[in-house]
Image (cartoon, rainbow over all chains, first blue to last red):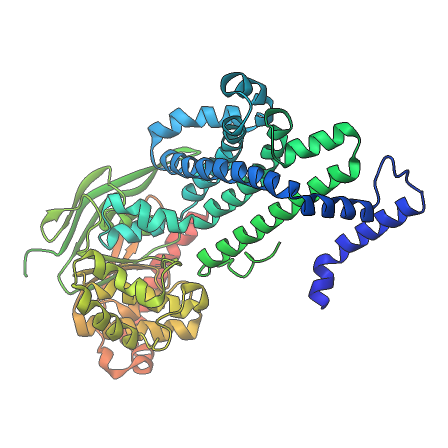
Length: 255
Length: 261
């Protein structure tokens, strides 16, 4: 009960202040809908089925983009960390594109691929790729030299060092990169959908916002927040399961 | 085995690059270790004794000089030389049993025999019941015992020990020293150990080598002929032990003092 209060207390307090502020007209409901109005709008979207089809579209784009971004990101990160030539080739590209806001490329992708899944997924792919590349690279670089040496001393062939030593030793870093990428995948899906999709929660939020149906807009935001939160919890659970042996295993379950 | 050393190092030099430029770490090192001999190298910190051990392990290459094991030049790490590192270097994602079995899997011990070998070494280091624990659940002394067991399990002819007891408290350390002596007595492996603890060096070694401050050279050699069967107390209180200990201590201290100036 106490942990429940600690976990959700701040959120409940925020919603309560919000609701009271709007109901007492301290804040104009035309600018900020009351919490109960948003709840009603969400119920409306849920019972009409409108929310599900859009959630499905957004989740599909986010997770496919993430899956490809993660797979390529881990591969490139491992390559960069173990090959000087690969590091020389990819390093400048990563450094140049790391701080580029990937959403700014959406208009270009619309030009190339039109409006729809490909444009959305490509944006998510690019946004999730870099954090995974960077965290994988640094994870492998931080593996203590003596782990590799002791593996070699015990007869591990060079070709197996990556799989048997470097990947498990940098797993925390790799999975942390994936978790950050998972967060980015929702941000980029919603942003891209606003201008480059006919379906999806991003499109729904955008349309209701344009029409001034702010309660419905907030309902859409709430729905995607719930899905993103659940996905993050699942990721934390996965990290916990994969890293139960790790020094920081007790911490992986927090936040 | 008269005439042919198990380990032979001649006129070895090694530089490394640092911010201050090229630093000479080891200068013209000569070393010969007989088969079954227990040699301990002592020296002030930073004298390059660990570097020498890493070169014997095949992890680092010398700039010049000869490094041979069993008559063959050392060019890479090999399972003939088991290494125990200062920081244990256990694989944290493997259990105690899996860590000990690691070298068995790479050296071709049949799957069916591995469990028996692991069990034997777990019993030897007194960690029955901890087989399925991960390194993070073990104390420093337990980790060290697993690191030693892991190296002994695949039966290398040579043991290279890099301050293997450095992280242990004084009591555990003495227990582990006696354990090392017992293992050496039972297996008669060739041992080269590096430490900065003079008592430990004289207590364990048949021969103590003293290295100079950087650039490291071999400057002194002491043969230790004490009967270790009489037990720790008798050995450490004997005139013989203390005579050599004092000489080694003085030799190391002079180097350390000179290095500090």
